[in-house]
Length: 432
Length: 177
Image (cartoon, rainbow over the protein chains, first blue to last red):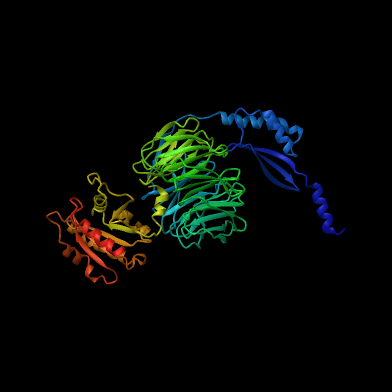
C-alpha cells in the first residue's frame, strides 16, 4: 500500500459528518444542518416545503431523524423546538395594511426594475436615466448611484442571500458587477451584441447569467469577470432567465416561443420546452427545482416537469397576453398576470384554478407572492399596485399614488416592506 | 404597456416601423402624438420620460416614441436611437426666441451615428398662431437645405386643430415602408 492510498483510507475513516449546528430558514421553511466533514465545515438543507401550522411536529422530527444519519437522539428536542418555531412563523400571518413611507424622486427618467437584498435593509432601482441607485429601506436615503452605463439600466439583481454584490444589465449591451457596500464597479462584462434584458446570480454567487436581445445568454465568472460560456439555441430574443436553487441549471424564456433548460456547468442545452404558440414572457423555477412555470403572449401559462421536459398543465383562463408568472416560496401555488387586467392563482399539485384576482383597470405586468405566501401583489398600468389575500382571492388593499403606470414591485424577505417602481420616475416605499 | 412591451418594441419586425419624436420642451410633441391617436389633447403635461403609441396608417404600424424635451433630459435622447427608422423633429414655429436652440439640438442629433441616413420630418408646429414663422423660414433657420445625407421634409402643422399632421405622417410612412 503506497502513501496516497493510505491517506485516502484514513480520510474515509474520519469522513463521518458531525453535526455542529442547526440553522433556520423561514421562507420556504427549512432547517440547515451545519456539519463538519474531514475538517471542513459544510451545510446541507432539509427542506420542509409542505410544513404547515397543523403539521405534527413529532412525526416530522421522526422522519427527519430517519433520513439524516448525523442527527442523534440528543438532537431531537432542539430539532423539535425549531420545527415549532417555523410553525409559529407560518401562523403569525400579518394582515396589516401597507402605508406609504416615502416617495423617492431620485431618478430623472422612468424606472425599470427594482429589487431588495435578502436582509431587506437595502434595495436597488434601475432607470432610463442610465443609473442604478442603492437605497436604505428604513430611511429612504440614497446610498449610492451606480453610474457608468451608456444606456438604459434595465435588469438589476443582488447576489442574494449574500447581498454584497449587485449586477446591472443595460441596453448598452454590457453588464456591470458592483460592490453593494462601496458602489465601486468591479467589472464590465462585454460580449453581448444587443441589449441585456435579464440576468441573475446563481444562489452560490459564483456565476452570473445574462440574457440578451441578441438571442443568447452568457455565463460569467464572478471572481474574474470573464465569460465562461454562451448559451446558444434560442432563435429570438431572450427576455427571462432563472437559476434553480442548487445553481446547476438555468431556464430561459424567449421570443421564439420556447423555454430552454441549460446545464449551468457546461452551457449545454438540456431541454427545449416547446409548446407555447407565441413569445414567452416569463420563466421561473420553483424552489425544489423540479418544475418551471412559463407565461406567454399566447394567453396561457404552462407548468413543466423539468426532468421529463413535458407540460403538466396548460392554464388557459386568461383572455389576453400573460405578462408574468411566479411560484410562491414553497412552490405550492403559481400566480399569473395578464393584459386582461386580472391575475390568477393556481394550485400546482392539482392544476386547479384557486382564484381570479379581479379589480385592476388596466393590464397587469408584474405579480409576486410575499415570502409567507399569504399575499399576492400585482402591478398595473392603472397606476396602482394591489395586495390580495391569497387564501380568499379578495383585494386587501390598493396602493395608490403613482401618477403613471407601475413597471415593477417587490416584497422584502419579511414581507413587511413593498417597493414600487413607476414610469412616473419615482419609487415608493410602503410599510406594513 | 409594461416593461415587456418596451422590449417587444425594441425588436425589428416586418409591417411596422419605429419612429422617434424629438424636439425642445413645449414644442408640442406629445400633443401631436395624442392628436394622431385621436386622444384628448387638453390635459397634456410636460413629459418627464417618454410616451409610446402605436399608430396604424393604412395597415402599416408605426411605433411612435415621444421623448421628453426638457434640457435636463435631452442628454438621454440617445437611449432611444437604436433601430429608429424615421425621426420627427418638432419645432414651435411661434417661439422665435428658441429657433436657434432648436437648430442646435437638431444638428447634434443629425450627427449621431445611430441616426445616420434616417429620414427626417420637421413639423413646424403651432402654425395656426399669428406670430408663427413659415415652414420655409424655419427650414432656413434650421439649415435644412444643407442636409445631404438623408431624405428630409418640413411640414407646417397645428397639433391643436390637426392641420398638416396627416400630410406629415404620410411622408414618414412612404419613407419607412
